[in-house]
Amino acid sequence: MRTWLLLDSNYLCYRAAYSTGQLAHGDVVTGVVFGFLRDVVGLQDLHDTNRVAFCFDFGKCLRQVDSPAYKASRSTKVRTKEEVRAMKELRRQIDLLRSEYLTELGFRNVFFQEGYEADDII
Image (cartoon, rainbow, N blue to C red; front, side, top):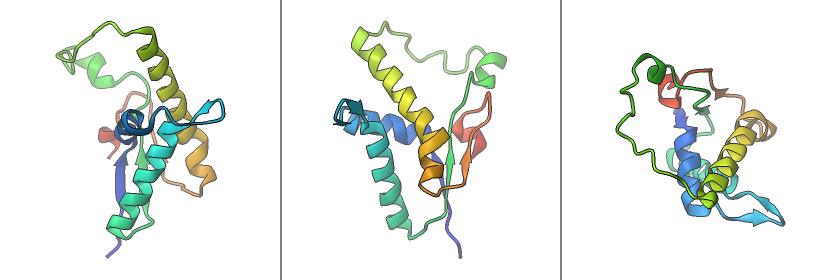
């Protein structure tokens, strides 16, 4: 039997942002990428597979457009300048993983589509 890992990559990136997000190489913040890849390797080892499909959120979620109540209960707190900076950095690293790093590492199953979240793609 062939085991595939179907990953909600945004979830793993957010998780990494809280655990390793401040790590840097010189002046370049790399913690999200590091934590994400560390978790992927751990999941591959745990499930003894090299078959991975990376699914990413991309663009404005169509469910929010169609149903404004979707995720409406989530807080819309005012973010500090540091929180805004951290979110921009998180998005930058997610974009690099999705558009460059994963394919450079030899992964070919990187999925995203405008208006869809990772769990929709999965």
